[in-house]
Length: 314
Image 1 (tube, rainbow, N blue to C red):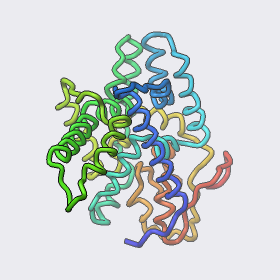
Image 2 (tube, helix red, strand yellow):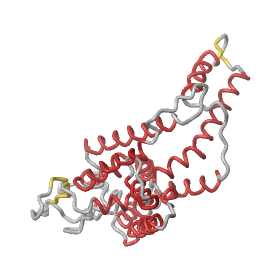
Image 3 (cartoon, rainbow, N blue to C red):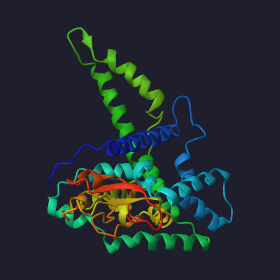
Image 4 (cartoon, one colour):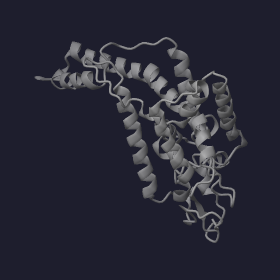
């Protein structure tokens, strides 16, 4: 398979994804009880950006918290520019993106699994079912909303493991007091551990009931990325389905140079959303995360993204 050319858009996307993942983790740590509880008022930021929570809350309770109105901005941006939120801002999407990049599939397998599949409609059916349940007063969105799933998994599975590992490691160093000659590791480790106790490590090791099933679901969702890129985002995510509906006809669309294209289909191999970037007049903006992998993979520079004037030629 041809080597990708450098793309500043891809590196800008990666930077954006990294920053929003770090922001999510920072806000998560504000909810952890430490010697001085520093819980702030912005820990709900990502939930407030989630229009799925806004709509389901309104349908189930006929009320909307003022903070959730921020999610209207997410919808507005998606309607105009497409599903950039999924590809550039969503921390759960960034996690799926990372594990998808670890796939060791052969080029032919990537080509076979990179295109659109009718099974991707599943997330739209799930979205409809969740909204219908909310209308009947049964709010099940928390089970499938990506931010809820990510927060629940980090809080009950990932963080307790990290917290226990750090406490065990630094406790062992303190008890054994290893060193080289007169130098003692505790000279360095104790200030580090003191800093972690103030910022990362909880005062008391957290444990939760029901951790095992949550861990199984979380690990399964992550590992499915090794089978097909961003499996959760393609087939299950109800928020992605809502944004797909909103971003069905965006201004920013794919543009092909038909004369330069030789139908090699390399643009499909690392397409994160299964948006069919190789099919003339068949590109699916509702499935596109604007990852720009197709543009970078094209050896003939036949693919770009540009503002599309309604009625104009792509």
